[in-house]
Amino acid sequence: MSEPISSLDAVQKAEVGAILTGKITGITNFGIFVTLSDNTSGLVHISEVSHSFVTNIADVYSVGDEVKVKVLAKDEKGKWSFSIKQSEPKPEGDNSANSYRPGSNFKKGKPKKEELSDFEKMMNKFLKNSEENLRDAKRNSESKRN
Image (cartoon, rainbow, N blue to C red; front, side, top):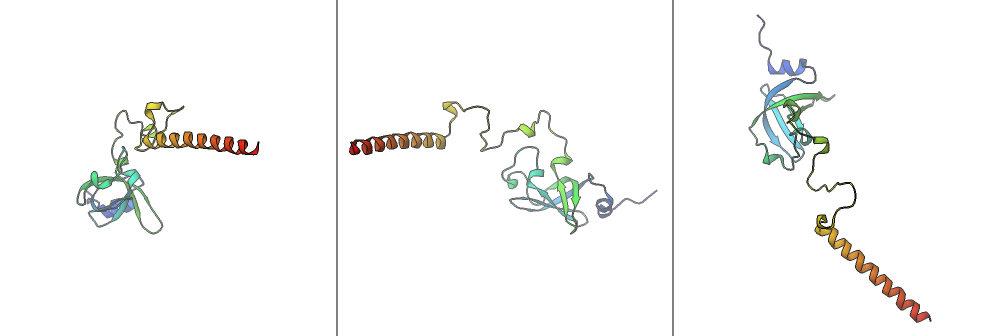
């Protein structure tokens, strides 16, 4: 019987797509650093953390958490890229290509009046006032010429 493959051998010999377990060693605003049991480290980019939109990674994970990662790539400098999202099955009913992102207001057609944000209301009021002021200024200048 053959000896078990160490984590390092599994990562180095694995094809892209191997799923391994590691521990979170650092959290940044752009991703999570994961270290495998043999001290091989890699980055899970924020876009690869979850199937749902994540604004702050620290709200979802903490340093020391154990996570499953899928090996995505190893670059020429020997840096590993991992994905937590791809190591898990996609949740049922998830349309991430069409999913809502906070701050996005993408809808076909013109938004209804009650759907306008405070900023949009403010800009509409400013535009209306500007047009009225411009109209008044034109009237005043025309009356002075005559």
